[in-house]
Length: 109
Image (cartoon, rainbow, N blue to C red; front, side, top):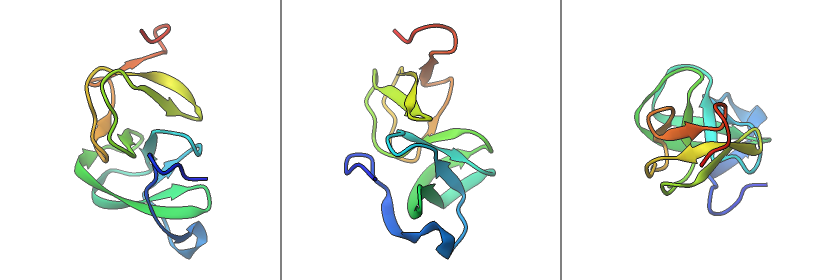
């Protein structure tokens, strides 16, 4: 299920083609790069493929936003909160230590 406020443009079943990144859980705010990425990329969301334009390169294994997100937003990955944004992030932008206070060091505040 894709949420309208976080949805990527959907084209068809994932088996129709490969993908560059994956949204792990339906309600995740981020996708994970499966290789170094730049430009317009294909994102797997369950059994669907969508596209997101990246305004900057995203390194392998790193996250990028699937929607515009405000500062203070609690970011979900794996269907669970992983941290809180310290600054606003636009769709396709890198989400990492420079703009995300991780819950790994303790509860996000």
